[in-house]
Length: 287
Image 1 (spheres, rainbow, N blue to C red):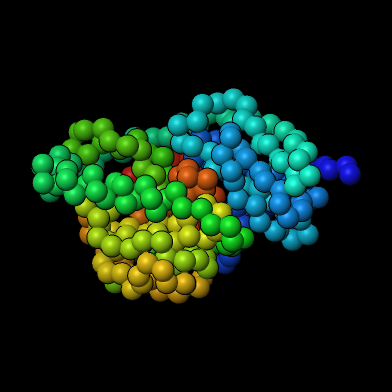
Image 2 (image 1 turned 135 degrees about the vertical axis):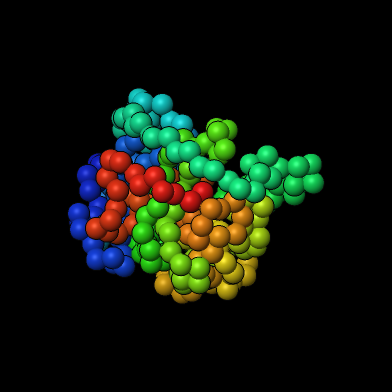
């Protein structure tokens, strides 16, 4: 049997209403998304990207494989590998281009949130294991990727910024910050199952939701949480409220997305909005 695979150049329109559903947008840059159309997809076909198994889901009259590109990915060629259930394997490549992310300097009044003490470090190490487990879970269910915005508010900080807290460089910003008043509802961006929920040292009140095959959303710094691990949630269902818990300088939601255990820019998963930054991010951000 002859099998053809080709790239899907674009999966969504350029403009969406504020809370419309969206499908992932191709962005072949560090922190972006690589997409591959699978018109002859059959159950049992497995697709990898850079040797990591990736999510596969239906879109209109075809199937699509989606890969998250790591923020530290170097420019160059990366390989999709499609293993058919018959054992036939086909390979195809995409070229990832460089992208420069800006710097962001923030002042944190609670200095322990920048330089934790020994007791804090004990807690942080335990939480690191917990977070690692949550973000690497993979289920076989067909991914729910028709995301909506998780809360109302304005974009206060974008993905990928090189961050400096009180003059000290830390890891780049790995999500999207949406500033809003404390108590503003936070909603599940798509159908899924709550993997973990609780209070974390840096992230405050945080929830992980599994959408299937390694597509996971994260909601942090919430004022309170309305769900618990194991809960099944529907798109738009309230899971908590905006707050400023953890390491934060003001009320906002930190929203992050994982694909194949890789943090990607959530903006490529969400409907377009009028206030969406293009080249230059707003710098009055909250961590």
